Image 1 (cartoon, protein in one colour):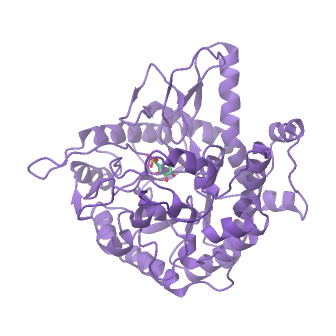
Image 2 (image 1 turned 30 degrees about the vertical axis):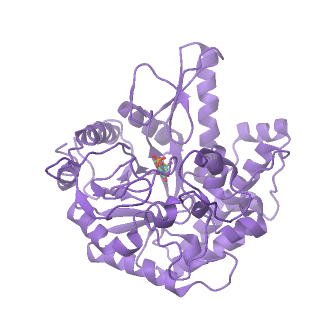
Image 3 (image 1 turned 180 degrees about the horizontal axis):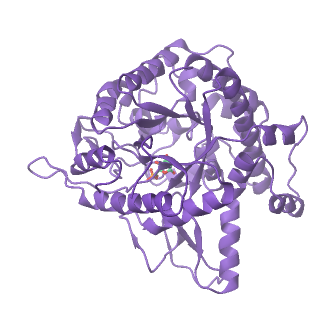
Length: 474
Ligand code: BG6
């Protein structure tokens, strides 16, 4: 079993789940600053908030997160100790453009990331930067309607231009949008759009998605113009859908469900709107603006690699009587009786990773990059101070085995693997700190109290060895 010697190993985080310091260094407010933990969260990540005022009695976990803003040197040093050759992180848009529509960026914000990237460079860690990870300045939502508005493309491009220019030589791997298909399930969290009850929901979703797809192609073009070394990726919340039975109706339902997701990568990787989607637009009377050479733009500026997250497969049935569901990455799926699930109900399917990698590679024949995978679990600090997260090691071991099989036996071209949340962080779906993914424990609870001290878990040494042996010792 072997992986290429230049295989990139590391971990992935997002600004709104780690940085905190939401009111430091002239940062503006962003969509996630107003998403509380607790029972209202599910509704808000889908529909958004009526206005940007604080509601008393609510805790907004992104504002504090794990305070990586002040701990990044220590955290990156720990990543380096594990042997990371890549660290995926995102930039907080509102740190660079506090309102989003300014012409000139906020120098304090740029300086912060400059220091972060220089720290990575000192340890020979390649940053893999997500330009927008569930992040949109609140001002752009209030005054422009966020990605519902075509003007967003120019604001985003100005932001990209600033990043590509300022960080030339420090960053070469970029992802334009995190889990671009997540707009289907959590439109507010993913893009900042708010869909009114009377609106045609699919028109609203695909119009915003269309703007993001155009912005992604324009960003790809710009990145290459500024530095031909730049490598641009898309990012899909992946995980193939299985049919509940071998009834052709179930197989067909699974194919349609996968298409909902692959639509996004079909555009970003192949460079055109697929025929099945054009038919859907006609059928559902969804109107999108293809003027200004949009078709040429999409086809001339496709991505270099396909980033994707994988937590589990999904299951679907054409039979409405089959209804037993379980939780998944932001949306539920039918429960698969052949699989175990995590404490949060997410199915655990390592072979599903190999299946998904093969689907993606068969479809596109472009390099893949696993940019998220991991197990969210409640960790216990034992009286002796140890955190024995064997369940996490088991989860990762089985997934990495399948990843290696996809490369070694199936010939999938894979650039790297970044596990989700190498350090504990705020959960996107639940807002909890107790849904921990890390090799590094953070002493903080769901209410935001705790010392924020970092501690190595048992999995820390395990992952270090995996990286050192390039996956040979698992
Ligand atoms: C992905 C996101 O959906 O899954 C991350 O890109 C998120 O931001 C991760 O944190 C895990 O999900 P959760 O809900 O357990 O945090």
